[in-house]
Image (tube, rainbow, N blue to C red):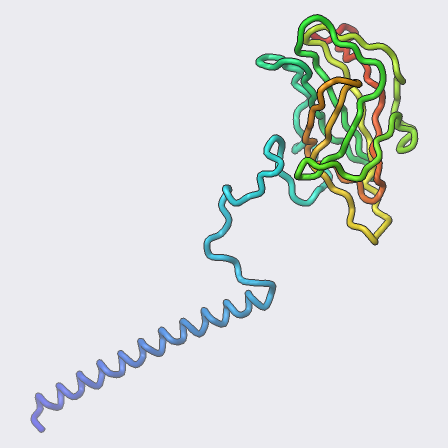
Length: 235
């Protein structure tokens, strides 16, 4: 064999070694990737490669904030108070306020603003229905008066309230999230339907954080009271 043949043989040998090494490296990479995938799956399933897009998120609470697990809202996350803004609106405007949470007690102010003409009369308590994500009623009792849930809430009791256009009335809504009956899952619902007075149209609101009733099965309200600001009627 000539000197050139030796060199050619050496070059071919080197190329063969490199090719084998590259193949081994690629196989090792696949092994490592496969091992990692197996470990992830063993911990509860591999994450889909396509991820989650905003269009894939649930939309059943389209007229209010979407929520997952209910948590006590931090102060910075609480929404602003009711706007009481009739611009572009007719009839009754019903708005939920922030949900205050303390020691399992929940309290929220519901504000009704009259966006019509003439006057609107109230005399008593709003009718409440807790609704699930499909807007179907949940098996929850609606109480008139709050003493059965808390004695720390002032209830003005039924009395005539007359609203002129752009005037408002408020009612406090309270519930507890106590959970003692472990035979059933805790009640958690996103919506609250409010009927201001007999014959009035129903309005559905979506409180921030939803309504977490635990196993108590009841929600209560005070009577309507005319909203005042600094001693004068809010207009």
